[in-house]
Length: 271
Image 1: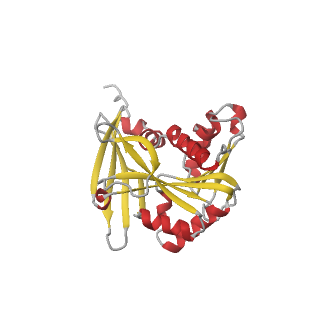
Image 2 (image 1 turned 30 degrees about the vertical axis):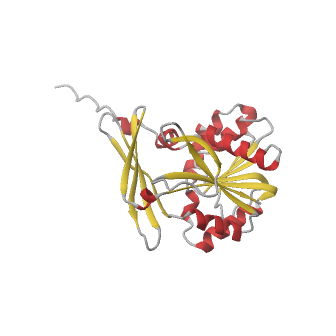
Image 3 (image 1 turned 90 degrees about the horizontal axis):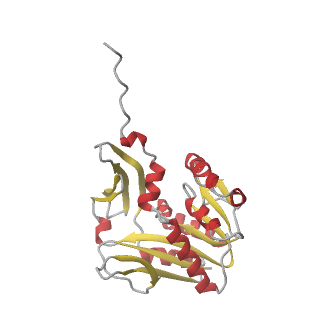
């Protein structure tokens, strides 16, 4: 008898969770365009410097420097491993002249010294790890201090009645299925535990590729805390709808919003 053939790796074993995350969760081109356009509308000038907090793979920072030869970005993340992945797979693939305009810092966003910059961004709800008013207000104050005099802080948030339920939502992409798992929610504390899983056509899975434990903050709370931290004006930008009533990816300032069961909004805080 011959030696058994080596077992072929499953699609899950061959997959890169960071690539999967970016394809299913992020759209850095759209996000950076929104930051630049909104800043220009508010300040009548172009933003040149960008700090990406909780930057992960730093894809947004890399996209930022792609949009202008005089643009530079600072990415901050406490996870050294994911920063190294971004340094190799994102920064390392920029044109050589552009790489020096991306600085990656393995640091805590609440203590890092990096600025002053035109824009700070905190996306994918990562700042929700600060689960008390004191902690999140302190972070907001630190961000304000890191901005230039007419700087702007951009955040995102999600909500709606479905945000308070334990449920799984599946979305199919080319070659895999993304599963958002709202595993736990405590109405009294606001504590939520969420996971991201990936499933593949061969039946293999990556369970809990990413896990999050955070507080589900509401928009009124976030706005009030930003104002308490010293921001002069805080606005919410709501997503518009297409002809089928689905989100169209276009965001505009809205003082009220809509009672949708699930929504994502941008928060824009002016220094």
